[in-house]
Length: 98
Image: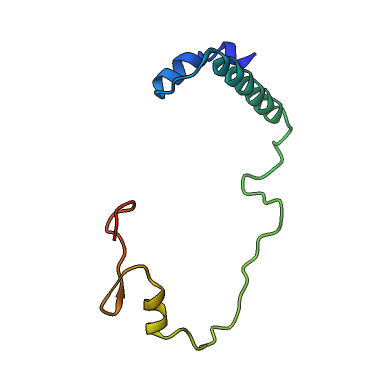
C-alpha cells in the first residue's frame, strides 16, 4: 500500500493538522487508494495521444458586437453594498471591509 511509503502522521504534523489515530488510518487508506488509481492511470497507453488533446472539440463562439441598452448608473449604484460618488467602493485587499 502506498500509505506505507508516506508517513501520514508526519505529513499531518507538517501541515499542522491534529489527526486522531483513527483519522490517520482512514486517511492513509484513502491516500493509498488514490495513489493506486494514479498507478492504473499511468499504465494506460497514451503514447499516441497528443498533449493538447481535448475530450470535446474546442471552438470559439462568435457573435456580433451589438450595442444594447444597459442599466442606468443610479440603478447599479443603488444595488452596490458601498458606493462613493459615481463609483462602486470595493475593498483594497481581499477579505478587507470596504
